Each structure stands twice: as structure tokens, then as C-alpha cells.
Image (tube, rainbow, N blue to C red; front, side, top):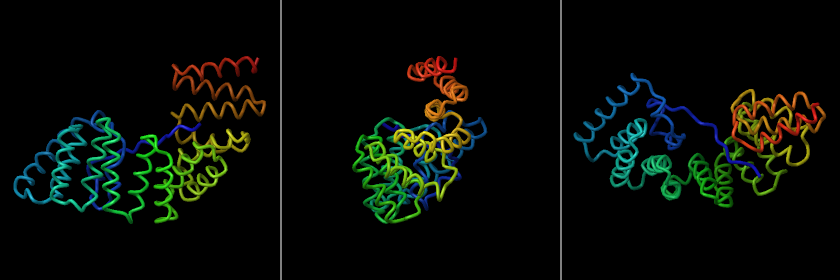
Length: 278
């Protein structure tokens, strides 16, 4: 019913902090967007940490920082090897396993990444962020029940974990429990009222439960915050059309088509609403 959607996070070397295992989890796409100056800085960082590894080959933090630098440069095989080297030196630390998981995700090995994250959680069972990331990985691997358990564990450890409430709601809605999804998305928005994904999931739940009028304010805010969310525009169009506002619905579905011109469902809905508007 719902599609798993996660807002992309932009990350720089300076933000990749060892003190928080979740530092290493944002989506890929960094290497292609960096400037020439950034590339030079990253290359210098790689040289610096390669030298640090050479001087102190038994310090796992040097290998982790080298792996992060390789990740930022898009050198995924080298990054994975650096994290594996760190694992040998610090087998009880979660950080190298989280780093390896991220490298494997970017290589397209979701199941390998899942295994690495499971290992990470075993080493940091009290970290709610770790359980949240594991839940996200379970969703990507098509294991919603395990994802739900992980999200709930994250919330058990931190009742105000907004992202865990958001993604738990998404997972529950995907299984058809729209009432529970609405409750969880609202809990997320209590802490993060500007979370576009939570707004989208909440609006979706209202639409699929037959309450399009209640969905409108959430979907309208969602597309303001995330104007590239084509499906939010589609749901907004459906809600407006259900209320008889075909002119506004036509504008919304046209935006969805503009964002994803190859989507046949959007094109078909555009044609239907255009006919109604006439």
C-alpha cells in the first residue's frame, strides 16, 4: 500500500563522527555531487589517514576514518576493506560494522548490509539509533515484521525517537493497520513537525482510510517541504477531487506528472481529473 520513503541526508566528512554509530548511514550520492575543491580535500584526507594507518596499524579508528574517506570519494571496495580491517582490530565495536553496512548498501548488497547491521546491533544493544537503522534495513530487505520489532525496540529505548515512530507507522500502515499508522505518525510530528516523510505517511493513511479531507493539511505541508514528492501530489489531487475541487486537483496531479512524466498511473489520473474539471 505505502512505499518506503526516506529523506536523503547530505553528509560531509566533518559530520561523520565516531561517537554516533548512525553517522555513517545516509544514502549514497555524495561522490558525484562534490566540487573540485571538495575532491581535493577528500583526496588529502585519504592520504592523511593512509599515513596514520601506516604509522599505527593497530588503531582501529584510523581504519574507520580511512573507510569514511573512501566512502565519501565513492571508492566502495577500498572502504569496505578498511572497515573489515577495523573489525579485526576492534571486534566488539559497532562502528566498523555500521561502516561496512553502508559500503555494502552502496554496492547494492542489501542482504550483506543487513548482516553487518545485525552484528552492529549485537555490539550496541542499548543504542536506539542502531535498532532504528536495522529496522530500515529490514524494510529494504522485505522483512516488515522484523522491521516493526526493531522500530519498537528503538522506541522502548527512546520513547521520543521521532524517526522510529515515523517508520513504525509506515510499516504498520503497509500491513493495513492504518489507525496504528496515524497514531505513530502523529507521535513523530509531535517531536518533528517539519518531517516531510511523516506528513506524507500520515496523509496517505488518512486517504486510504477514506478521510481525504483530514489528509489535506498534512499533504499540503508535505509538498511545501518536499516539492519533489510526486506521490504526495497525487494523493493531494485525489483528496481535492473527492471534495469536488477539480481545478485545484488538476494543478496537483499535473505537478506529479511533471515530476515523473513516465508514470502511467499519474497520467491516467490526470486524464480523469481533467475530464471531471471540464
